[in-house]
Image (cartoon, rainbow, N blue to C red; front, side, top):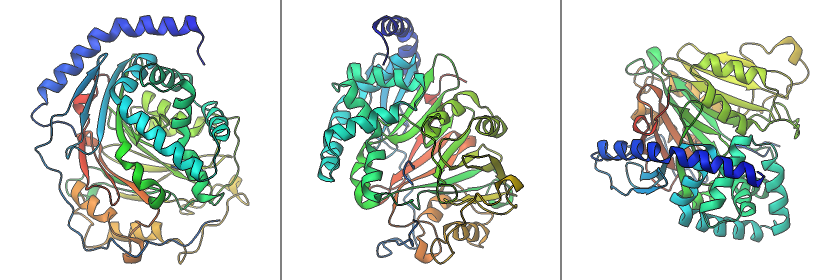
Length: 443
């Protein structure tokens, strides 16, 4: 927690930037008014199910509409707008981390309070006491960067939530994951990137599944938010998360660098709580990296607190960074790459990893990686993938040869060359577009 002198220093610094930030944001809103913009913290694996196969391989993706509602709000230079279909909130923030937190809290105060009340009641009903919620929130916050802690401070100043309540909300989805899975390692998240001869125009398109439990978490997709940060120092970036969750599991920066994080505890079960939280470190990666190679270098140099598989992509190619607690490597592909929750032994693991990697579950138990690679190479998708076709691919369930299952909560399609993403809460909304270019005010 910041002392009072430091808080005042940031407030003064933030206020000095308000006029500039507000002017830039309002110019963007006016210019683009015709087309308004639209995890994995817990860690044995289980056989995947689609919960009755409600979604199959024969689908028609609903293409986002071009005529979207013009619902905007301005607070201290920050701007709130909506995704293409009007379902999801987008906040554009600028200035110091404290100032951006104040903008975040002021723009989303009503929704933040509703989310806090609903999810804490949910946790209480699952046996997570108020004291436990706060203790776990404080422990989680101890692994966050000073920038994110200042952001949380700012949110508490304008959201009508106390700082402790803001900490609890920040960790609430993590705590819900723990309550739902009760110690099981989740088959949580998968991704597929295609470029070159695999896509319609050669440019990269990436599809991402964020998986935990749809039954438990679908109700919170109404709080899914794209938060765009334009800090005083560093590269502009966005974080795609339920609001109030400031750690990062999916995001893109103004250079078109896209990252997504999959739990990797199926391959390495170690956890070092004294190290920097990876989902906090990914914010630094987007703040400082202009290329895939920059990001890989940062991820390789920082010791991992927990095993993760992190996909990094730009407009030309993607890699899968397998990052156990004892090393790091980047796995590449020739136009196609896929990842799930186990490390892929092709190419062979480094010699130093021998005896340390837990063997992946059998194909009969978790076929998602194989399914995604088969789909990318199929006559239906190879050479035809673009944003719309990637949406169609993501909606194919495990039983029909895809990766969607009853744990899939959120899906994202990213086209870095366009600085655009499409998001949907599964069984909550169709895919809706968020064009990011007008929101990024810093390179």
